Length: 276
Ligand SMILES: [Zn+2]
Image (cartoon, rainbow, N blue to C red):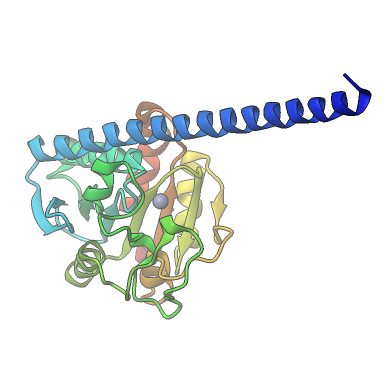
């Protein structure tokens, strides 16, 4: 074989090897993505089923696109009123598991002794939960679907599709109606996996209070533009102190130990009697 032929042959082998490695990497990343989604789906379904059989007196506040229940629990009476949301994003089941565990803890330990009111909605997006995906059943990111001044139809990532028009989704409408009915003094919306305390509206002090307890950093801006965001709708445009608690993707027990006290202090926190 001539030298020229040999070099063409070597190049051909190189290209084949490159193609092989590239497709292997793609395969591995697809398999691990699929594995993660199956895991999330498993957690999400487990959480939704647990809510269905929970002995706490949940009410069905609304229904999702596919008719699943959006459960709500009222705990105690008094002031201030705190609303806690979990699982705006179905791919974040830990946020809902934490909210459910906190509801059980408050209800069982303190139901008649809290002198403040707490309203808990552990799974805003049950369809996303049981499918292990961020969006609702219509492929809409609920946390980009709020009727804020900066809402836009434009989006870059499919997983952040803001919907055809603001508040187009039943899950978004359900959240808006909760704020209208309960007129909360503060809101805590739980997400994963950024391990930080984000805040919108007049919630700086509350954010630092939580941060002192759980050790997560406080952040005022998440680092990328977020039109149609719940924090903008509630915190910035309605002036309700709004915390987005981003939990790390760690086992529930660890996250529970880090945040139980922080959240308990947060629900008792009353800006009118700033005793913290
Ligand atoms: Zn999220």
